[in-house]
Image (cartoon, rainbow, N blue to C red; front, side):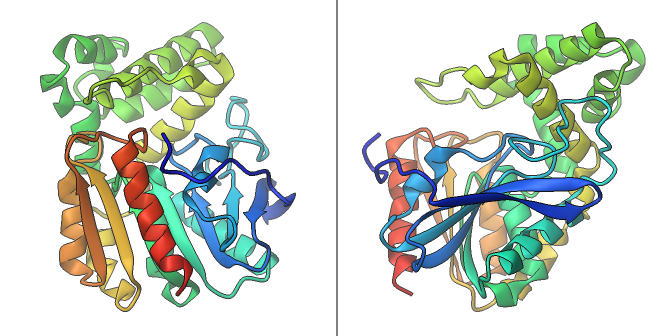
Length: 319
């Protein structure tokens, strides 16, 4: 992929106490005097990635990244079964973003996010619109119960054999209910072997439902048992609770984004985050532009998606 900017190293980093015994790891890169932008990672639970900052012109942006509660280099680690997840919710993360903005002395910033990061970014922008200059999102999702049901159950129509294995990993009593909640219970089992099996099968299904386009490669991070347990634990925690948002929260709140320019980039073949979610948002948010990438799936792993993101960020760099 050549559309992105060259890799760069952070010029500053630290750990920020955000309360509840949590400390989040943050880092800044690019131009210290450039346009501020916060980059929200997906998952939830993936941790920030050096590759994400390559969509930004390092000469014109001050790029802020952080690891959300429980993942990456933030502490405590959700990969430890003893870590309290009750203080890890969407509201907590929105508060963390604001605390980080204040800590870094930033007045307003561009909000960038992908997949789960788009839910978090849009929820944050609706709560604090006066702190947001522009929004750029990719693989847009709203993390509603309907979307969770789509990904964990209805997509079995597309991958029937893989889905049957995913479902049948759960005890029989959990197979007809909320599958994310069922997996969350397995991941809390006192037996490490049960937890590892749940994490492995959850991540196998994750690798399946995003594989809708030619050339997709399995995520090598799932080979690490600590990463896959952390990932599965945080994702199922958020999905079982539909991100603690009402079914229509992000759509009903879209009017709060009036006057904030936005670009939403989505793959036409993204069935993990179907394009109708981004399309529905733009119907309620006239300042947003929807860019559909014909042969792309979920994520940023193709040249056309990367080009669309770089184009949008380059355009906003001078505002």
